[in-house]
Length: 234
Image (tube, rainbow, N blue to C red):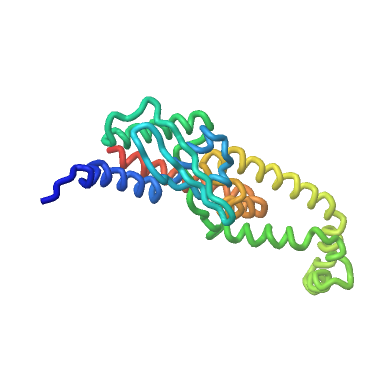
């Protein structure tokens, strides 16, 4: 008969496993914020954060990249008295990180493509950005000038575009550059989109073409997330 207590399973193993799995699958954004606020790691570098282990006094978070892997110890201060406190304490740590970083607890996780009137405006503005950079497009023998000449007042419109081209491009580049900067400063950073990641580039590219429409869709997504969080509290 063998009854060695050293061979008995750790009674906390199951709950720790559930916490680690839940954090990695549903709250990776919190892990990223822990690293950003305590270890000053960029959101891009921290984007693959995974909770590796958990004790009453610390979290061990790993970052794996193609060529290297590194772990970071995040203290839990004061330490937990039991793992039953973990959910509340980790939420408090995340709130503290959000305050320190001046970001929202809401994480934007998807790109909303333009539809309807937004899609029409996106295509129109994309055509302008493709055609206007080359002033010669509005002079013969360009195909664009040829096609414009086939419609009433088309040749006159082509001459107007040729004269206005430097002003139009300067205005578009100026406005859209400011819009991209404002999108990064007030939306993407605030809603925890890792700078330089795929999602970040989708929103930046969309903003650089259409401007205000991208802001409307992003704000709509954030409002939906806020409503969902509010319902979960009740």
